[in-house]
Length: 328
Image (cartoon, rainbow, N blue to C red):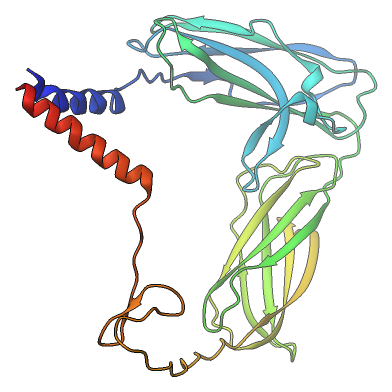
């Protein structure tokens, strides 16, 4: 009987590793809230979520959080403690159904109520609504549904909108002769309103002022939110020879220049390969200065002593296998 124990254990481990958990396709209607609002106004925004027939029943939480952004520009959830900027709309938004249970194939509606303060100020106000599964489904199994994020982007009517930016960092990647490089421009929205389609043009000039390379990024698909920043990376394929160069980055939206920044960098000549110095002749079997032994043909060999835990583990496995064989 015990002969099959190791095989059974291996099969059990594989089953646990590759067990398939339920995957639910959560769908959202009205996936973005973007509108012009008046100070002191209040309104309800209808929303609905659903899952497919055959999907397991599940509970979903609906949270209102701050509007953050990752370095690549994608929207990220900002906890309340970090959402302290002047352009936050998190406190404006309430959900009438913060916990929703969906049966298989079910659709449920709920409202996001937006109340704009009278003294809201100028520009845009921003928040994110996160709809995500709770820890377990109705059957007690973990759900792997991807959370849905709904951007809330409000523009205060009849106020001055400023679209400005600042380049907070300009970084040149690997600076190796005759090798392509990447130039990363970090752009921050210093205005009071979001903008789409940000891109950068970069030019590289040599010490004589001659343009030796130029490139542009594609317009970003993400809106850049006031107070946030994103990295725009431009690959430069020109092979540069050793020398000192200046890179200039212009961040734009359409034909509007948001910010410009220049920085110098140096492409250095690779260090020459050092010729190894002759070593003192040693007799066979003597100890090499850096450890290991020297063989008769003067080639150094190395060794790695087995650690005590590995030896103990190996002995334990051998004893267990021998014990099972004796019981058969």
